Picture 1 (cartoon, rainbow, N blue to C red):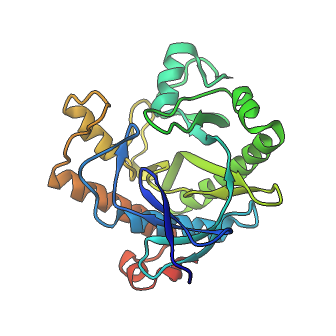
Picture 2 (tube, rainbow, N blue to C red; picture 1 turned 90 degrees about the vertical axis):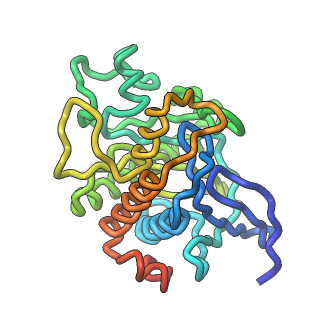
Length: 285
């Protein structure tokens, strides 16, 4: 393998160029909340994200092409195709939660999607909606309308990504429900390959990019317990943090609780013991 050249750092991943066609992504244990990287890592988080993404990439490539070419033996490393990434993220929401709930309370709509009156927090929507957001280099991502996203991406590319996002959400929702998990919402990033084909990149359907709720404790009308990073978000907000850099240090018990939630989600959704993945990452493919 040619020597990897470091080309960029993301909130979680270090990105290396292998050649003109391939990148190497290495998922760290960094965790961000409200787009701020916290000073405290979550052990094994990067391996959870890499393994879960690979699991979904392997099972959805018939729905939409993705960038996965292979996994490294460390459980953190993905070899992938280079893409020209679209300048927006696509969030698919099946339930009313998070910033969507805040928008709905203020306006009765979410990112330009008018919704029925009288919906309650965490309620299932009549049908999934797509709410795009800009990808900020610094600071917070900003929700935008679908018309604005189409203008940024080009209508054809945006509509292709939108259709792919909805198909992926439908597939993943059914699988998650069979494993006792509600996929409330999830974020996708897409690019186009050398032939202009819309292709799924970055990560897919992980606790970092999704709201994952245990189905057996779902209760309409308030926030839900979760397998995702809401646990650490809640801690950070409890300190009075104003959501700007730097974020607060995370105590050991919150680190341990977050790690346990991530691994629980991994094992439920993949049906692979996490220790087995650590010894043989390719078991998820």
